[in-house]
View 1 (cartoon, one colour):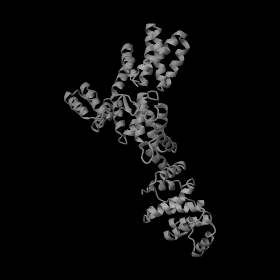
View 2 (cartoon, rainbow, N blue to C red):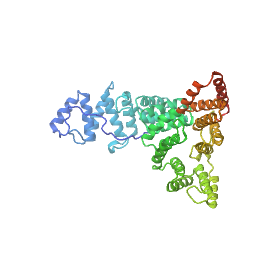
View 3 (cartoon, rainbow, N blue to C red):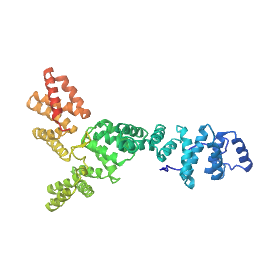
View 4 (cartoon, rainbow, N blue to C red):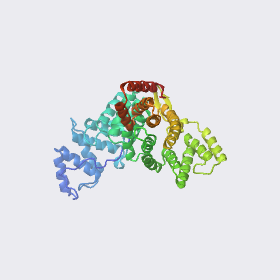
Length: 461
């Protein structure tokens, strides 16, 4: 038997006007109210709850309050006041108001209260019954009742049960459905988890727009993991156009909560700065992430000391970090995002590697100096690893080369890559696709679509 203590009694219910707030009632007034309560269930509940809380003019007397509530909870058939009385008794026997814990009594009263789970404040009752039950059918019935009545812990419990096959047959689709319910109720952890599933293509299909939708909601509730992931989406152009300023903002918020993923990526952004002090900060953050076990951060530290980024070149330090990187076995300790793909049963969760991001950044640097061929070479490598931001920028590079060389055939490649970037939820890609659709002759559009279909087959999934 397992009972879960959730909060205390609190102010779950409002008193009726029969009890006057802020005035101490006399013994005669209380006796009169108790006589009336014999035929007035609402007043009976208010009296019992008032004695337990010591409010509304009543002195605190838990035993007297229990007496009123027990009589009310014994009503048959059960009405909503009896259910509320039973719920308060269940909480008492679970230890509220420093009452002695009697699990059997708690469950007895929660079973009564669960008949009115939809009444505000009572959805916890079937959850407690489910958690205490050794019968899997009852567990599912009562947990669903609590979840459907809006009790978030029940939704999360069903998510875990279906996901892990605990007490229920494993059912990932049902698990995600309950996770979504919790996310819609504003639960930050559920929102962050759902965002991660859409981001990685785990269980839910990969969809960066939906990943952003849920991740930003969790991030705004100060969920550090969601803040770090949101920073990644802006940094890498996944579901959002690349925006280093917004990426930095979210990384900073998560870093303040000691999130190592954010610390590493914020360090990476600071290393790109022309300000020496910021570069030094970036080195320190990268070192912190590497010491915490991020393989990609340790690899970056090798590059930092080999090239003298933010520090003096130091081969000994580079070797130290190379040894550190080789000692980290978990490739997915790489906090940028990790490895390219991970097989989970029959599903593949797509991820972007550190090397892919480096190719992308080299391509962007080359494009800034109008070294188009070099830009094309680097961006093609990143784009073939299915990096949407690289696919979009590669389309732009092809357009620039086509304009420079007056080579119309390159517009076909630009169209193919822009359409693939659009598949990767890059909003700006639609502008390119629409414009090229307008200007390209029908034959070239047909050739462009053939190239698009061929590329889709070749790209790393």
